[in-house]
Image (cartoon, rainbow, N blue to C red; front, side, top):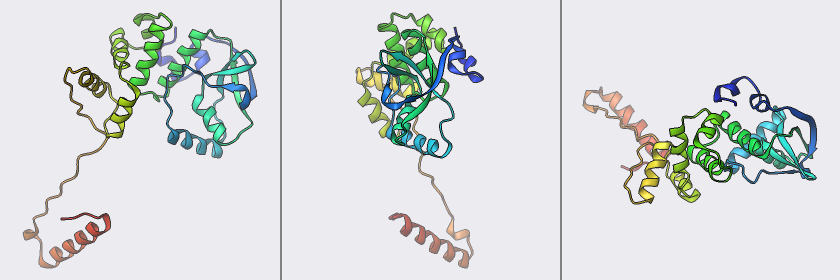
Amino acid sequence: MAKRSDFAGMDLLTAFGEKESSKAEISLSDIVPNPTQPRVFGKEEVSDLSESMKRLGLIEPIVVKKQGKKYQIVAGERRYQAAKILKWDKIAAIETSASEDRCFEMALAENEKRKSLNPWEVGRAIQFLRKEKRKTAEEVSKVLGFTERYVKQLSSIARLDQKSVEDLLRSGKDASVKNLEALLKHKEGRGGEMISSRKSAPLKVVVQLGKLASNQREKFLKELSSLKKKYGIKG
């Protein structure tokens, strides 16, 4: 079973001990997204990736699994969406014959490898593995390299609805474990206070004008007035 550290120097299939079935250019029209994709993608980040792929091309192929006449994405959902934005006809892909459960674990591990999931998204994926796939906390912990306690903690956070998490992010708060747990407690009427924020506190500058020479004081006040006018600051 792969550990988190295994992903540092090897690709996803190698880390999970899976063999590549084949590498090929697959038509985008023959590819379908994974309905159990653990990540919620934002339009802005997909747009940013499409700009990068436009300049540099596709650096790493996506991973897919044959599903009937189509190919379902195992890893590389964001690259696939970016390719659609760029109106590519085909995309480089590696086909795997891994089981459905292993494919989900690989998708979750890839997102964790890239640090592209917030704790709530990881929690939703863990919840899916535990409820739908009957995985124990111990089994999930081995897939992600987490402690069982942390797996249970993230699974608990997943009780939050998506809108609540999005509102938290829009308010400028981090989707940290501490903030998400506090939000959950608040939602369930158990208190909870979110303290960390991505927004820095306003910077206070105290200037003792009396200690400045007359010409320096005049110059400072003139520049301050100009800055206030430029940024629409009153007072």
